[in-house]
Image 1 (cartoon, helix red, strand yellow):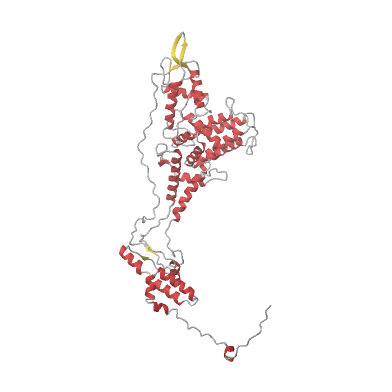
Image 2: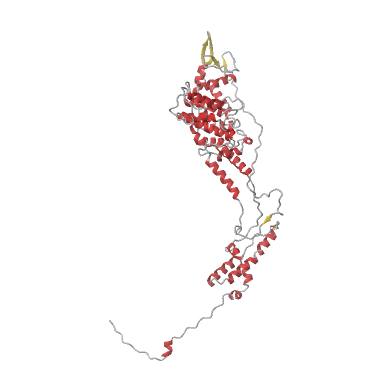
Length: 529
């Protein structure tokens, strides 16, 4: 018996149904049976069907070993209702299947479920703030600018190194990142991460993007306690006090600090029943109806545990904060009860872990429309949640960091020119107008002549500079701005006047030579060793 793994994607529940029906019809053993003195070929008993299908589901990686015999009977009831099987007399259409010796057979053809057709959905293109788009009501003719007043020292700092040709530029407007922009960034990047993990071309068939609330995502990320549990702003949506006290009682059993009344035999069972009744009467499952397909799709990644955890983390961020808080508290209680060896049996017919899955799976995940495998899929999901709830209900750090860096980048994007961050004197606002490229080139060539000439004069007249340093700076200036330098020193003679040659000092005569000019040479004795 081989059950093909059905990966993530749209209509995964329908694909699983069709896969199970085809496999059950092809592999279920058929043989001859006798009933009321009459023989029937190619049929099977209800018990044989339960035994074989139960084993198939437990071995399947799509459902897992947590599938119970009761769930298998429920699935066979749906098979009978949908004419996948019929009784030996050809009757079908009702869920009166029982685990007994009643005979059943396959009809000539078992209908498969068609894939639902949804109306084409036009995705909304999320537009991020564009800094080159002028705000509404403004134009290039009425843009206030700050005139920059620079002294020669600033010019020298800016133009001490040759900057080459300056390309023509255009005016760029900066728009403020609003709260709505931040919310759209969180929504779009969160959904993009989920789509990437699932490996889908689009999320529109597993998720209605219009129903995703970006405020929920941001609240679930930042409004949390030290334990990572969501903190609600609206206290009316909190769990009732009596439910929360009951959950604390079982989670910390037998050390119940909130317990103010004596316990009796079977007390823990009554407390558990109180919690189960509250969650069982919720109007909507904790994972919500509109996220059913998304969570079912993620179940196709359970073979890749790390990817499945990341996908569940993102899907749980899409939940309303009150649902996420209830889910966190419920999963924590369930996990603690299962690990508590001192907890008495809460049910005689099931183990503690199986009881938790069977009791709370329907209130955690179910479909608004009838889905034949929703019980099995919910049990599979709740089992995985119990084993990994601490990781799944954490905020995905990689996603949070990526989005925060994106928002910070958009907030700091700007154009800075050299000297623009210096302290300048501001005058009344002036306005600029768009000019032609020819006029721009003319201004670029001649508009800075006067400040550069002033800078050159300051270097020339600076008495603190030595001749060597002054020559070095003038040489650097001549290399960077030859036109300005040529205008100040048109000839080599004018440049030479700046550094006049000093007269050379004549060597002084030795006084001893003048006193005895004609003294004869006197020989001295030499001593040789």
